[in-house]
Structures are given as structure tokens and as C-alpha cells.
Length: 348
Image (cartoon, rainbow, N blue to C red; front, top):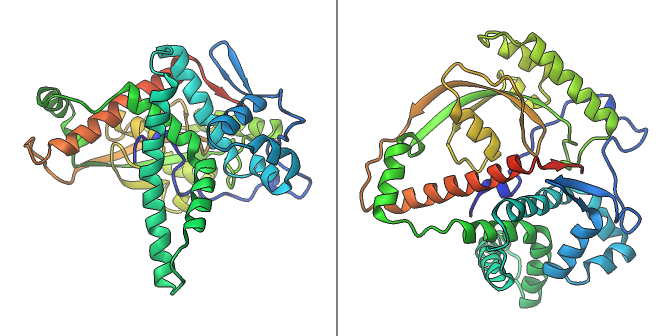
């Protein structure tokens, strides 16, 4: 597809039971439109982004009539409490960060529309192909054109912002590398091709495990307190990392095996880019002391081992694979650098 930092990973870490999941009311932030249209959802550099600005953008670029539907249709209003809103906010803020750091020279509306449409078209074709195959296997009638159009409209609402962000990154960092540039990148990063790492992680959730929405003040305070406890207890040599996984990690699925995530590639679509980047920057046995933030929460990471699973030579046959990896590496650098320089802060 493209750069995995622009989208959510498909599998969410499972969630521990805790007092925040009581029936006393939502344990995460809830925003409504238009009542909260002037409420901040992110701070990027010296600019505050509001819920109204996000809705206006989606209405203008991805789903005409979205504003009206939010005001009149409860089922659409529910999108603001679903697993759509957090990635929308993140992607909207990411584009603003790129704009602030790199200027408006890449923001030509016509070029951006073409790039976004190309990403959307390619991804929708894959999605539609899976849907057609699913219907075929279940013996359903052939999908109608009206249904295809309906699926496309819904797909654009859900993924339009991620397509726009990926399109922008494709404009900023094109894959028009020379053979010399590809060879130099390959020689500088030989482990990226065919290498895998095994890591352990401790997840401290400051976001809802189901929707990814930021927890309320009480929930965030609890998360910060637990982060401080882990930092105070984690030994310098990491020898008690597995013990702290069992005590603190909200990812109950991996906590059962010491927080282990195996066979992680440098650009692994199963995991957030921030996790892959951090794991690959460590040496075997090293761990992070500061937390790494992802769309799931805050992570402490310990790298266990590196394995060169496949040995690849730089040839004409492998050049295209190197081109894909190089573009992803350069786009990741652009995006994560923009987040850092603008001190991007998400509020939803």
C-alpha cells in the first residue's frame, strides 16, 4: 500500500479489565458535532486544530454532505465515538505538521487530488476484490454496480484522509531513484532486506482499547502513574523486563509470553512504524528508557535478537524491492521528523 505510519495496524492489542471500564459512563473523551466544533483535537506547532476544521475538511474533500449528516443522523454522529475518529485526527494533524515543516510547495490541490485518487483507487480495488471473492465463496449473487458505488463512497469516508496523507507523502518523496541511489541505500542498510528482530514490549494504554480514542483525564493520569512505576522499577540491564510485562502490560495477548513480538521486519505493516523504528534502533538486549508512543498507547521496548532470515544481493531482480523499502524509509523520516519538529500533540 504505502507508509504504514499513515494508518492503523489491523490488530489492536487486547485490553486488560480495569476500573476505567466501569458502567459509570465513557472512560474516554467524547466529542459531539456541532456542539464541540470549536474544541481542540490537536496542537501542531503554533496551530490548534479543531473538530470543526476536521469535519469541514472531510466534507470538502472526501464525503460531501458529511457535516449535514453529522447534525441529523445519529448513526453518522456515532462515527465520532468509533474507531474512525482517532486515526482521522492523527492523519489530519500529520498533514498539518508536514505543511508547517516543509511548506506549501507540495500542496498544489490538483497534484494532491491526483495522488490521493491514485492511492484510493489502488487500495479500493484490493478491498473490492476481497469482497467479491467473499461473496463468491458464500454463493451470493454477483455484486451490482450500485453496491460497488455505495462501497466506494463508504470506503472514501473511512480512508480518504489516510489516502490523502499517503498521496502527499508520495508527492514529497517520489520513487524515482537512480540505480546508484538504490545501491547506496542498500549498502547502507543491508539488514533492512531479509532481516527480522524479536522484541518484547510493555503497553501502557492511554487510549481506549476498542476505539483508540484518548482516555479522559483520570485515565491518562493512571497511565502516567504506571509509566513512572515501570521507569522506577526497570533495571538498567533489562533483566526484570519480562516480570514488568506481566505486572503492567495492557497487551494481555502478548503478556502471556513475556510481551514478545517475533519476526518483525523493519517496515512491518502489522505494527506501528514508531515501534518498528525503535526496535531496529536498539542493539540486542537493549531496551528503551523513555516510552514510545503509538496509536495504541505508550510502549517500553526491549530488543531480544536479530536474525538475517534471507540474504539478498543487489541485482536487477531485487532493485524494485529495494526501491519500495527506500521510499518507505524516506517517507517515514519525513513524517516522523515533522511530528517531532512541530511537537505534535493529539487531544482526541
